[in-house]
Picture 1 (spheres, rainbow, N blue to C red):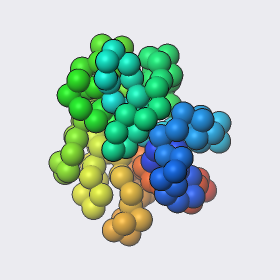
Picture 2 (cartoon, rainbow, N blue to C red):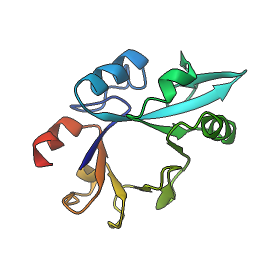
Picture 3 (cartoon, rainbow, N blue to C red):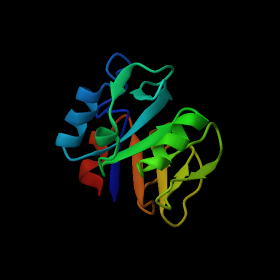
Picture 4 (cartoon, helix red, strand yellow):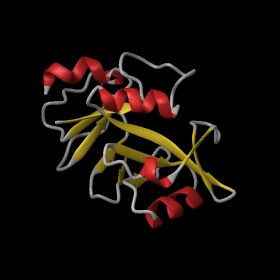
Length: 144
């Protein structure tokens, strides 16, 4: 099972550090993949949930452990150009990543190559999912 940290979180939300490249790196060093929020503005990539905050380069974004959530159409286009693993959605029940994974909004049912997002919100059983993305991803490490 793929274990994906939501914005670098491992043991709960930490809005002060979420999407900070150092925080994201720490989650990857602990063996997790990480979903990050990506912006593109003035020919520069940034991480940040509600706005562009942390500048990053394309080498960082092409890390195979990252799942790049494009926060705008421009960001999506630029992420596709550099072949980063990416997707875009708002509150869609499902969206596809450019690597063919189904990103399921919290509470949606499972399917082939489906990533369950925040299963703790709806007490979803994760055993039949391909992967899970959570702010509490550390809790899932032994449930693989």
